[in-house]
Length: 135
Image (tube, rainbow, N blue to C red; front, side, top):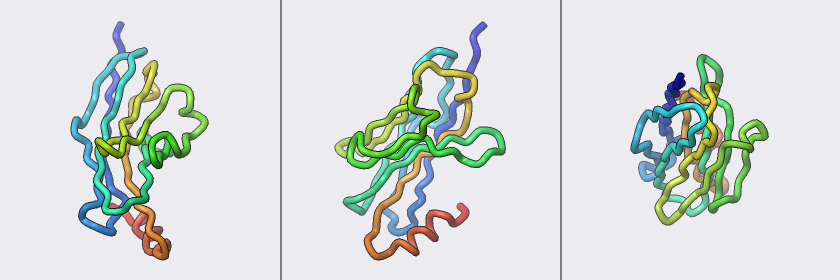
């Protein structure tokens, strides 16, 4: 029996600093089967030269869970529980940060958020406020 997965990648920009700061989810939802590998696309634009890209996972009514962050290619962080099967590389040329999930499991069925955080020197309080404001 083939188990169907419903993986929804939703793009949200945490930045309200400029109209040019945004992320785009080109494909929308992705369906795959257990054991397969899937890639969730995320493209971004940023008016800043220094920025981080994030991926979060939200299942059910739970709060979004941090998966990983990327800064300048492979630099960044990844949560321990996702290290074995989740990965991403930030490509500044194509302005993309795709999330790759290997050996899909039923527990991977969730909403996946891609987020952009420009780093603004001297404006950390405003940035923090923007990051935590409801959308």
